Amino acid sequence: MKQSGATGRLATVRLLVQRFAFLSLIVASVALMILGKADIVLIERTRALVGDALAPMLDAMARPAATIARITENFHELANIRTENARLREENARLMHWQTVARRLEAENVVLHDHLNTVPDPGSAFVTARVIGDMGSAFGHSMLLGAGSKDGVRKGQAVLSGEVLVGHIAEVGMRSSRLLLITDINARTPVLLEATRTQAILTGDNTARPRLNYVAGSPAISVGDRVVTAAAGGAFPPGIPVGAISSFNDGIIRVEPFIQRHHLEFVAVVDYGLGGILPFERPPPPERRRRGKEE
Amino acid sequence: MKASIWVRMDIWVRHLVPFGVTLFLLLLTAVPTHLPGFAGITPMLPLMGVCYWAIYRPDLLPAWLAFILGLLSDIVDGTPLGVNALVMILVQATAASQRKFFLGKSFAVTWWAFGLLSAGAVFLSWVLASMLIGRVIDPLPVAFVYLMTLCFFPILTWFLARTQMAFLRDV
Image (cartoon, rainbow over all chains, first blue to last red; front, side):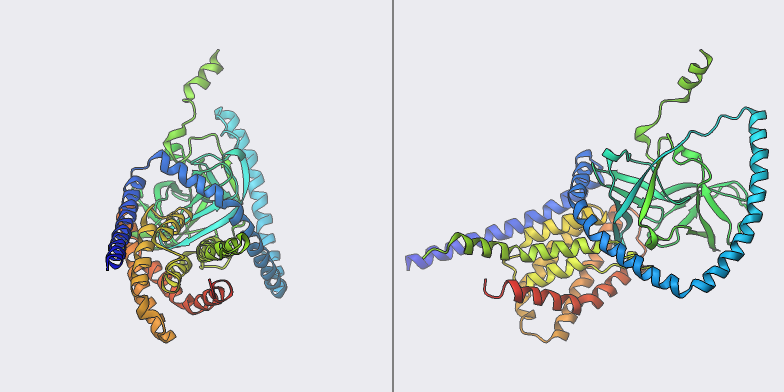
């Protein structure tokens, strides 16, 4: 009788402990939400640390997937080799014409730059990184890269695929970093409409086609217009191709990015010597450079 | 009689299987598939893992492990910290408390019940993520994620059941 009473009490205590543990877990997750919202350095560092720890595993899993994708693409290309060849011939003819135009313009540009004493754009250095994780979720568009601060990746740097803007670096660990795509809900990219030089902000909303907001003035916008990065905000160098206007109705302008997310296997993290999209690591103010020249 | 150290280690490793498998599923969702359009609607595989083990082996995947898996999922997916952690513990608790309902039911009924449970989970994470980001997230991709999760349920249940039979039949 006594013993059963004791076991009963033990069971009650155990139940209470379980309830308490469960409640404290709920409180802990709510607390984490609040802490995460406050953007504490500790949270950011922890995220980077976990990313670093998981990076080798993700890297090992990404490689076979990339190989399979490459093999299927090979088959696909073999099947379409004739039509592809015809298309390339046509494109080549068109591009030869453009090359002539570009050569002439380049020569003209050099002369004009000389006349105007233009300060040249700073040179750029880049790191090539493998995409080791493609975070597919409806709540964010980001990728994990297999290069981190020890490879020279810094927060805010532009990420390019070929000549096209993919996004920017949002978090950096020792050997991994998180790339925020231009389509992510938190991504804001200062852009220009190439034809009219109109400034705007490209705002991601987790769909494949981000929106164009804060368009300066009321320019004539038509579908197919190219959108490139703007120098505004000192985040990216001007003129990197971003996308083309895909639809324009009810005042909502959407842009189809040039990047094809599923094709990304390697990307270039580029350091233009600018502050990047985040204001923390600004380069020294330009006065110092000018003074140096005068002396 | 006390079991030898090897037997105990064997049992210990086998008991880690539910957590390990769910962690593997979590990493699997992050693998670049190179399929056009798939990246935005990847099914919530870790959610299914947590749900399955909460029903069939709640002793091996308790709420605190579900919490850790949710936290890792937040970090890997880049969702606001704590969202998946909260959703995972709630799913674990709901599934574990209703396991008597799930056990021995036909597969169609289980599928339907999982549909209800995951609908709640997806809706909750949508509300929480929207609140924390400060803007309403487009619900259409979220709905697609939910449908993809439902479609993957039979395959994953089969895989998890096989795993359970292989490693945890009598421990």
